[in-house]
Length: 421
Image 1 (cartoon, rainbow, N blue to C red):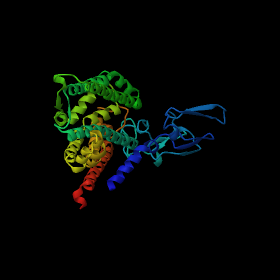
Image 2 (cartoon, rainbow, N blue to C red; image 1 turned 120 degrees about the vertical axis):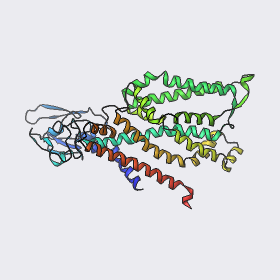
Image 3 (cartoon, rainbow, N blue to C red; image 1 turned 120 degrees about the horizontal axis):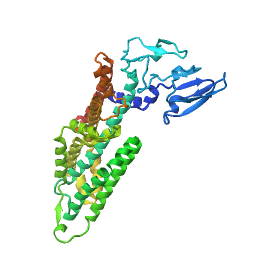
Image 4 (tube, rainbow, N blue to C red; image 1 turned 135 degrees about the vertical axis):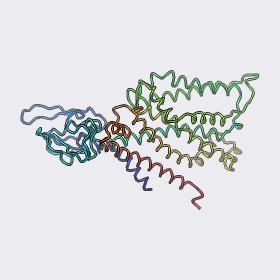
């Protein structure tokens, strides 16, 4: 439960990172006009406003994202708890300034003085003066997003394939040879039209932004399922002779062999290889890569549960009542077989965060402008005396991984029926 409270705190911190660490004030009054820069730039970073100089009568235009608010003579102001953004350097505290070192600050009068407490870099800076504390807070959002979304993709693939393998086995699903062959052909053709033929469109969409990339990915998935459905529908046609003979579809063997092939490859090396050949580095692409290479453990857990459940009385009763296989799987088998899957997902999220941190440390996967815990560790590798660039991101990774592992242990204990007795 204590780990769960820490996780909730990390989630809240990630959601509110824009307001916790930002070089734009939460509230500012300048020349008689009130601004809320941090809130106003949350959805539109390039928002502009203007104010009138009471002395000269001239209007001054302010573009919030490039305005140096610390140099304005503000009448009143409320700064964020950490008044620095992770990607913007502080020219007066470059070259690895430590948490306890002398730090400097340029006041609105243009004087360079020792930084007051509220403008100190409490966890130090890197080579170009970026605040480490701001990077840690915004890196929380990246790490949690990568862990949750990548395992969401992995869980979707693993649960579907594991459920099909466990429910049908090798001898339950019967289809004509023509339908069997057409479905296999449909899978290959669907993959070709959805991902290979749309490779350039997918890359361009991800380059435009996360929203466009996700939309293009959804279009590709829809294309894949539509093509498979069309070929499966064609396979329902009655073809006389050899192709009309009924055969059993070895669903379990197909899925199990796929799991073994994927597990035979070192997961980290596979992710590094796929990430390295991508033309453009994107956080969304990294999440997809981690997701499609991490589903095997979830599929095995789901398969094992369905192999056990399909022999129980309530599923036999569902078959006797004439329920369709889809209804039996989704409404009766799946809710009773997800308990161990939740445990695997909790451990998988921790593993995904560790993989993302490792790739960021190696400079692979995430864009250079993205500040992550792994990229901060990589900066520490370049300057061994800057211990704060290693210690603080390392502690953040350690705490997050430990929290998810402890939550996984807790779920396993809570869902174990033997411990309830």
